[in-house]
Length: 450
Figure 1 (cartoon, rainbow, N blue to C red):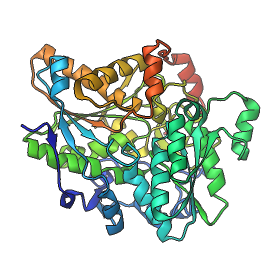
Figure 2 (figure 1 turned 30 degrees about the horizontal axis):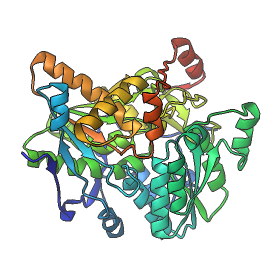
Figure 3 (figure 1 turned 90 degrees about the horizontal axis):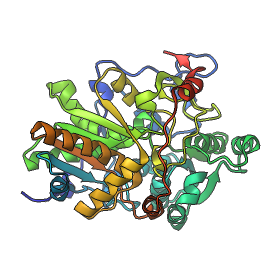
Figure 4 (figure 1 turned 180 degrees about the vertical axis):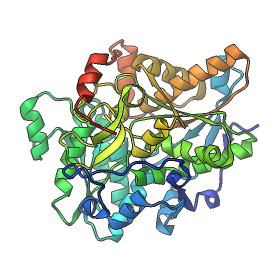
């Protein structure tokens, strides 16, 4: 059969899929940090346009994609699905391995799938400026691109370790017209507070979120945007899995196993949720595995608790698997996965044992990334190598058991702006890092039990 499975523009989804409508146990509500009572939409109005707030709380199974957003998607969607014949041979496995390749987008990852609708809804409400955070820069690049498309200003707080590791991501954002600051910065009270305590802080996504929210909340012309974690973000990403469903049907196969990298949840949700619908509604038994860093293991070693989404404590309390909002991860190159918590929806699915999670060390991931590049000709982003590490384990298991499993994973972006990471790997400069039980206990001891 063909290595590349393509769709036509007519097959771009017309609606986003909301998995909450299919879940047996709905996620717990976010709480007000002061009263500990469920919050209403009014608490989110200073940060988000009303249409996104409606999507955040909706129970409808499908949400229509606006024509302007669908038209913008046509710049790069539908994205291709590949059968990884070269990788299958390299791994000597009977498994059939497929990957959905999101690196063909203008910013080189899956992130425009939500950046475009977020910019669109802000523009429709008359917003002039969007402020956000970014880890490795994929989200910041995507939002910068989308803001430029809809004539909005964009301000990005980029985690300092990634700001220094990945200068070309910053330049990409600036090319699209964004202002980019290394976080923690001296532009906000939150940043100055962190720097006063630790002048050499490498930063974290939690810190950068605090800075972005502080900038957005008091200004009626400015809104905040998030690239993962929240329900509406995961909703937008389901275009990935819906396309993949059609493409797998054209290939004549249904995945036994779905794998995607995990930072806050958008990557994993985008590919897996439309397939999980088949489990929840049709009784299928597709395994969905979220792959995270061993150095930031909120799904595999965190606790299910109410916690803040940011470091300073400016967001509502969210029910999620977390390492504690004060956690500052090790400076691994997979900057997009260095977040202390998991999205509310994904956390509930894991709590109910409807999905799985696995953690991998940095060196194992880069080894997998290099092997994939040599077999398939695409250099994966460091985040994507975590999914590959899981795929390698499942492919080896299929070989040992002599079973022909079908594995689908999300190659969420290319690594063209991450070559310093590969250079450090080849030079032997990268190290593995694993939290001790005592460190995790200390980080999570003050959290609010669910």
